[in-house]
Image 1 (spheres, helix red, strand yellow):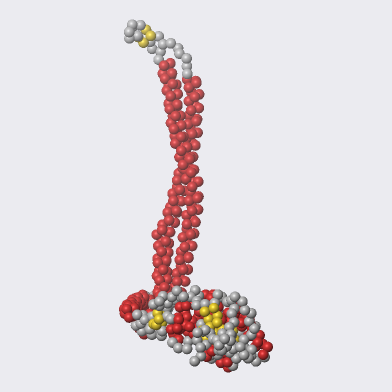
Image 2 (cartoon, rainbow, N blue to C red):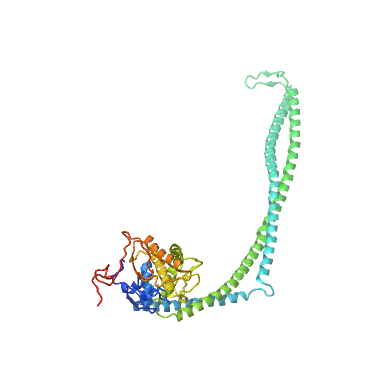
Length: 483
């Protein structure tokens, strides 16, 4: 089985252990005639049941069941850990109670006459109203900006235009001055008839008649003055438009500024204050929830404290073999037993169970204790065959050796001799057809038709023990004789 030679397993529920030996578990693989028709489950031990079940569980799972073994050092460690855990729980409870007291003090500051849900609802409504006002004013703000944009564009355009007009007006004024100077200068020259002396030779200087530019200059002067006047009228109109637009922009800016100030200095602070208050109410609600949780947690901690305080200072779990053994087999044994019964030819099969209370096979809800020895032996044998199939299917630690003495001992079914003989033949045929690489030795009586005809081959051998020298085989052990 590849088990450690020094392997020890639980032998009781107090942490004591004993060696794992073949002697302990052989009763599950070797069934003598005295046990073949046992009223007790054939899977249970005749003595020292805890060690037997621990050994069977190890063989089935390779689990050495360390948590069920006692150890003084571990017990001391567990005792220390228990004290530490109890101190921790006590500290947690004290912290929890302190927080609970602080929370209860905070809840005293709430307004009276209204629930937290009512207060939260009112604040939510107020916040929604303020938010709507902010949204409405923000929409107005955006609308004013949208209206202001074309006015600013027009103002910029007119300011650029009037700058150009002023430059053009300056140019017109320069042209008018120039033309006026030409006309005035020519009139002045014509009116000077007095002869003058040359300062160099002292000769008389006689004025000459020159071409007149007065008429052309006057025409150009009139045109320049006209254009200048028209430009001034246009400039005045544009300046009026600029003044109007500037006043309008100032009005828009004033309205936008008022909206910004109302939102920034009035509505947003109000909403912030309400939001802060709302959060405080939500905190209070969380506090109420926390208080309920603290009551529950305190109860849990109190229960845990009582549980750990009552827990014995042992470093192992008391070994309860039957529930563990049952949990391993409960799903497979009924299935395997039904398959075996079907293959043997037993009928009817309405139900097959493996009850936890007795770890025995229950077929058609009829307890074997109320039936004859033959039925008890037959039920025990089917249970052992189902257990054998479990081991071959799920366990790596198998002996692959079984010995049954009188597995169908005195079987006589109420349905008649024919069914009984068919069941006997079906039982041996099942063994022939399902060897599982096991060595199975069956001892059966040859009289009373208890042993059916069996086909012999390389895997199946039939020996007739005569108890008489030189007739067949004397006995199971060739060297042993009766005294």
